[in-house]
Structures are given as structure tokens and as C-alpha cells.
Length: 128
Image (cartoon, rainbow, N blue to C red; front, side):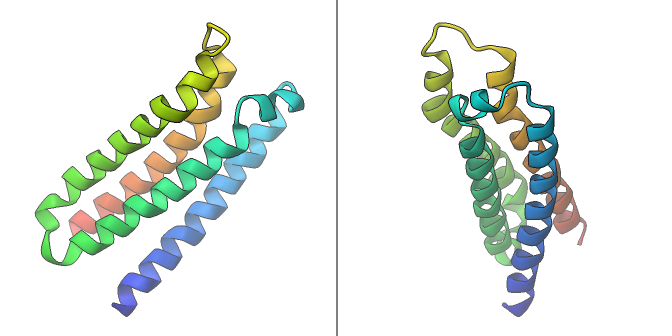
């Protein structure tokens, strides 16, 4: 139990550092600061951060007794992230009739950042 707690703290801390770095780089490269608020920039990062932690918690819980389900849980988590995107973000982005590149990247950059880090941890768990 203590190892799980430490793994959760480590995962969350490293994810926070990585996502913060990407957030600040993304903010720096963003063309118009006012468009960040319009495109739900902060929400996209927060939602991806909390979903990544939730998926990791599920994987930690499954790790002990149901190792054979880790891959399916991971894929289910990715599906959940896309459902959240299509339910909450996509209608907002499509409200003006188009989904432009900046709107798409606003969600996809934190999504792929979290995905890469989650994948690293899942592979690490499966190799043990």
C-alpha cells in the first residue's frame, strides 16, 4: 500500500512538472493571449491532468490482482479522454461552424503529453 502511495505521488509530481513545462511553452508560443481563454486553454490542461491521474489510480489498483487487464484499462482511459473531448470540448470549438488548428491543438497538446507519460508508466508496470 505504501509503495502504491509513493508511486501515485511520484507519478503526479512528475506529470505536474512535465505538463507545467509544456503549458508554459505552449503559452509562450500561443499567438493571441485572449484566444487562450476563448479556446478553453486552461480547462484542456486541467482536464487532461486529472484524467491522467485518475487513469493511473485505476492502473495502480488493477496492478496487484488483475495485471492482465492493465492494457485494456489503459485503452479504456484513452477512450474516456476522447469521450470527454467530444462531449465537452468539441461542441464548444465547433460552435462557430469550424474547428481551427489552434482549437484542436489546445486540447491535443496536453492530451498527447499525458498520453506519452502514461504510456511510459504502463510499459514500466507491465515489465515488472
